[in-house]
Image (cartoon, rainbow, N blue to C red; front, side, top):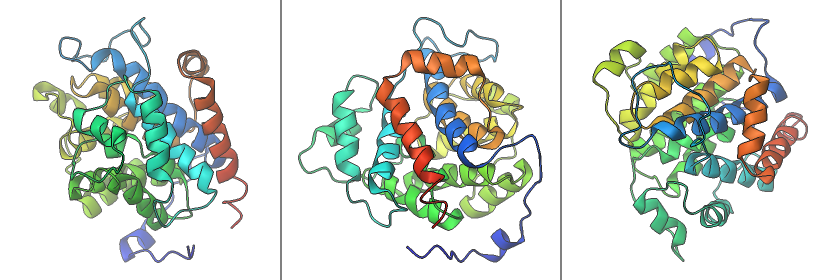
Amino acid sequence: MNTNCIVNSFENSIKIEKNHFRFSGAKADKSCLAGAIIGDIIGSSHELKGTRIKTTDFELFPETACFTDDTVMTIAVTKWLVNRNEVPSDTDGLVSVMQEYGIKYMEVGYGHSFKKWLKSEYPEPYNSLGNGSAMRVAAAGLIGHCLKECQLVARLTAEVSHNHPEGIKGAEAVASAIRMAKSHYSKETIKTYLESKYGYDLAKTVDEIRRDYEFDPTCPGSVPEAIICFLESNDVESAIRNAVSLGGDADTQACIAGAIAGAYYGNIPKSFMVKMTELVPADFIEVCDNFVQMNNTKLRNK
């Protein structure tokens, strides 16, 4: 793919925020992927009916905390990109990797339609607008050389199953937020861009959303809210706490907010990293490490 991306006038006009307390490159990549996984783990105890909460004051890692389908599919997409060893322009190899990981970790919370897709001999997209397309997109937001490239990769990762326009939009929006966060754009610029390009209303506060918010597993009903949880954060932990406190699809929204926050702040508490290594298979960590190395050596220099 030609890496001399053509961006529109809005993208050309936005300014990069110089902030010496933020990180880019390998540190942002690692923190983004870890933020997605940790958000999923923390949110997992509050996803199901009867466990949802409306407060940011809760235990982060109770005994019930575990990785779910959000982590598994995040790793599958990351592994696909490692296998491709390039910025892909097609979906070759993606479905097989998603099925491989999905079938290996089948009982971790997939929706009924996606389970059927995973088990299908000839899986076809099924016009889903579910937030499954947005939860797995972290690595797509990190790869490539500009917004246009990461948006294309995000679209590819969505359309193999979630080919409804809203499913694709949700994946692209999250990937765009991650790319801009990693690239030191300000929160206000990220907000303005996502509102302009994707039509999301990001004006509400977390407190305003939380009051009447209910479980919604669709992209249009959960992705904007997860992005707001990042926008209103001070660090990765507060972004995740905000997302869980909405009382909605806690693991997925915390996964999304954690990924964007990880890319933005570039720093994950050491205790979180220790907990992650205790709770996920060692090969998941290896996939993330291999992606970070690839993305910051070979692909960076192309």
